[in-house]
Amino acid sequence: MTGKLTTHVLDLSIGKPASGVLVELLRVGRNKEKEAIQSTYTNEDGRLNQPLLEGDNMKKGIYELHFYVGDYYRSREAVVEDPSFLDCVPVRFGISEPASHYHVPLLISPGGYSTYRGS
Image (cartoon, rainbow, N blue to C red; front, side, top):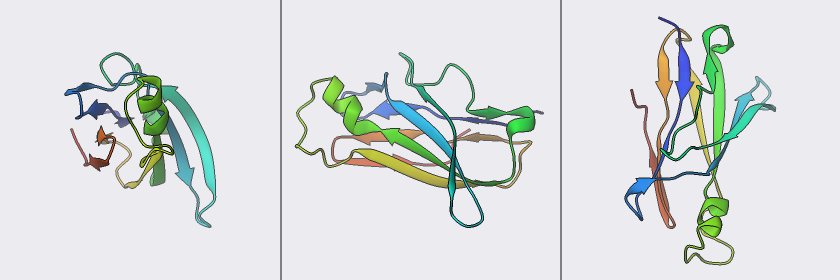
């Protein structure tokens, strides 16, 4: 089995996938420095067209996903505060088994979010 890192975003305020959310992946180094690995947007299904990491690129370590939900809600012309309560949602997590599938979903609304290790 080849390891991979995937995500998806669901907008609980409308009960649908969140398309067009900018997602950035960063690796956190030993001295807490951050290295940008890639950025992409969610598709119509709230998912990415490809894994963020897979195969030999899956390495043990600490990572962060940044989800730009403020921009997403503004682009939908949703009623949000100015500035929005949530702008960028960072999720820091560890990869301890690079051969495994890590799925990090994000459930959002203008006033809150939730995440977990999915499958």
